[in-house]
Length: 363
Ligand SMILES: C[S@@+](CC[C@H](N)C(=O)[O-])C[C@H]1O[C@@H](n2cnc3c(N)ncnc32)[C@H](O)[C@@H]1O
Ligand code: SF4
Ligand code: SF4
Image (cartoon, rainbow, N blue to C red):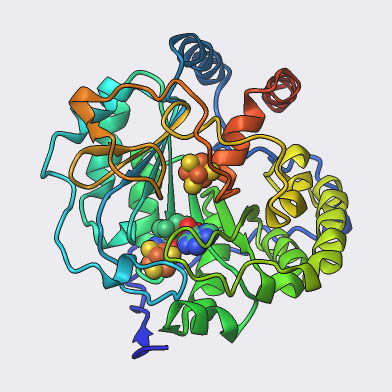
């Protein structure tokens, strides 16, 4: 691992938090918001449902992963963003016009490391003011996040902050090449949830962290946070070492079984059971059908304003010339949650589940 980077101390404009909302696993989850989304009024939910139906009818995209910088200050061995030495930040193209043209239901701010971009609160405001209903989230490794910066994003209208967390303890620092990162995250998250911020751990399931997968759901729950699981892919930079190999299949099966059980018990696992059940098939290279999400329901917007079908595939076109990919792409190289959940949410049963949840949580 290369030189260790320190996390920045958190400047505090906001007063130290009151007690964080510590939620014990057995305390039941009545009143605990189990959905991925920031709580919404009934009016907002109705607008969300109408937008969903409209995006379905127009044929996508449902979700845009918007890369707000190419840069990253971590050194993960499964992703090459941090090796890229090029500029590229919001403002080089008209991102509001690009998002108006794509007009998705959800936008996820990503990178590189999105928190390197200092314009994000303004960007969140501008996007929300210009697009009708749109739900905006962000995924970050968290080292540059402070209470103050998170609250500025939350106040601007961000719907959730996803913080990557693959291990409990120092192994997470080693994976990211950022000294003190785990401690920083676990100190910060209870302060955010105590202020009402919707925090979701983003946990990639891989060979080395199988023992950490279920404990992360408990940790999240104890901090009033949620967790979303995704699967390791070697497509980012060809590093196959973290794929779950046949020797770990039985362990993976029991982890998934436990996750599905914990999903109803803890109430903070945001993946659908549909998605979780297919994880062992993905690692066995036995998904029953190839990708229907990329380029149609899901697209990636680069910091230069180009559109890719997904994070891993080459550029299709500039945003102004974007045309949806109308056929399935013959690819099963990932089972990222953004692909899997997009495909899952298109199933009528899942849609119904989402609607029932929305109605219940507005009661
Ligand atoms: C590309 S990163 C960008 C945001 C930020 N730098 C971070 O790591 O949170 C988005 C998400 O992809 C995950 N990721 C990166 N490389 C991956 C890989 N090879 N397979 C699966 N997920 C990966 C990260 O852990 C993170 O949760
Ligand atoms: S996964 Fe995120 S933190 Fe790690 S190198 Fe890639 S962009 Fe950076
Ligand atoms: S399966 Fe789909 S989303 Fe994943 S890498 Fe292939 S085309 Fe992209």
